[in-house]
Length: 119
Image (tube, rainbow, N blue to C red; front, side):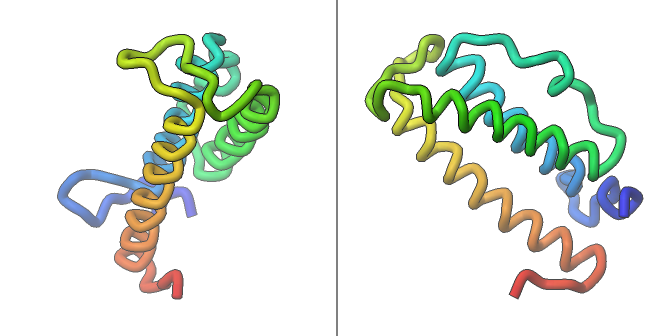
């Protein structure tokens, strides 16, 4: 529930709500802003008040970023706004690594909050 999603059972203060929000922001930053050189739509920049809202923002973000990725000329296309210059292939690998790391954090938080495991 939303109370559990806001609770942090770890010293860093990381919460399930923060992780869901962070993953949307990572895709917005790397794909929409840095790669495509676009502004993130205002409705995706709101601070979610619930886990359901955070997940909805993430789903809307992935729909937007998927469209940008599919429209790219190739995986070798360079980012419009990043130093040093990186290509779409690097960005996707970076986001995959970021998602995998944070999925592990979600598993740990979930187990600490309610005892459920991802196994």
